[in-house]
Image 1 (cartoon, rainbow, N blue to C red):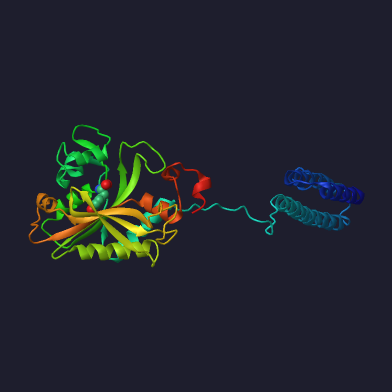
Image 2: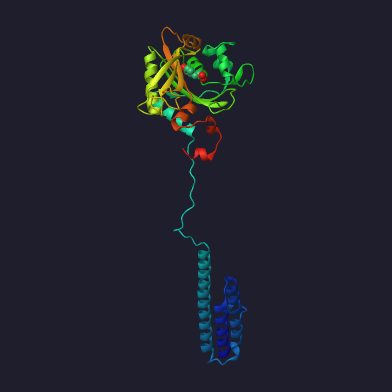
Length: 341
Ligand code: DAH
């Protein structure tokens, strides 16, 4: 019996140490220590041995059970450990490898310029509003003193949706809308950035869709001097401190008097070069004193209040600022172009 126990121990130790999975160990436990296992089978024959021998054999059997339990547990730990090692090896991470770079987007050049225009005027106390891109003929033309069949309409051929509704050709309808809404309240100090549309063929300086930003001030005692000062401040913040401005008489039906504004050339500073075509000046925007008729239509009394309006093209400003010679580049979404800003 003693031999049987010894050989059971030997066999068990051997199979335990060569086992390599949890399931295998479970089977081994059942095979040797289970209720119908080999150890139990041997102990069943205890009745055949002499009573004096029984305690010794009994003790031996207990020791074997304990030993096998310990071995099973330690083998189990070994297996778990090695599984974990394998897993870790598989998931090995070299933190010293260079990471994959995340490409961060950036703003479109027109957005940069629009944001800059907005922030300059906000600092001067202006509010910012947005107006519809699909507009009534009334606000786009009529309320701006451009009646039907007025020749000034010819310069702004539009995309008409119906007889009375069109894609706005400029941001100026914002003047009519804002004044109509606020009349007779003063002061009015608002700007309106946004997209405009014209039936223009696309070329280096024209695009059927483009941006404008409109500036509007109405208050008591607003004079041309206020307009000129505001423009000079704007131009110097937008471009640089050295910029001079020049106002040339012009015509817009909704302003009187009207002017076109040039800045001293960004390349030659005024001596004359290719960019300014030898004139020393670059045209940047249109402006004027709000026409009394426009004030009246909106519900203001032009004898009590006056104002000025400015209309500028952020596309043109961006082209001058960044030295871009083709407006179409802004709308082609060519990353080789966009990455440069
Ligand atoms: N709306 C004019 C255009 O698109 C630009 C303009 C000129 C706007 C003079 C103004 C202004 O507010 O005062 O041609």
